[in-house]
Length: 263
Ligand SMILES: [Zn+2]
Image (cartoon, rainbow, N blue to C red; front, top):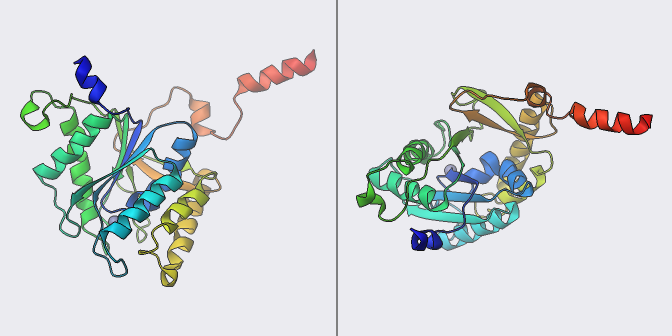
């Protein structure tokens, strides 16, 4: 066991899963950059290389863009599982490959697709199903014939992001919330801009939309910019006032400064 643990890579706090390089940046890049800023270790797993696409010379260019985007967000790791773009299906092989990444990097939180994306790639919906299954597979005991020496890992929490530009609805789930990305909106946009093959000057309206949606979601929760998430289970809190007033200074700090002034 000691030998095994030495061979395991350093643990990640969060893994975000996408179908194609650029999904994660567009859906939750601001949140990932914020998590890195807060000192968490963040990884990204893409199930396909996203190629071919109309303006890209090929996978090498797309993967170089993905690496530049990772560095822009500050994420510690990016893995591509190389399943085929455009014909990605929820399969045992794909579930297992993703579950192995979860066992290897032991994230506390997995973030992924939460809905179908009509008028966009069907790979997204398949990725949601693969991600749900892989979170479950990662924790299953008595399955060494598929996982070899990788120990079981129970992912504590899962969240869904939204990648739909065409819907006014949040993905279904027990709890909807907005993460504040006021400090990292520009980093998110810079990360998406790394994908020059996907967003040439003729498609610059995409950046206006990304910024507009971030400001819309942020405004709904009282932030300058935000990203929308859905929790498959109800959200709880042990600190009600901090939960409903995230921007306010806690009373302990206020009282401390009052006392200081009084003396
Ligand atoms: Zn995509």
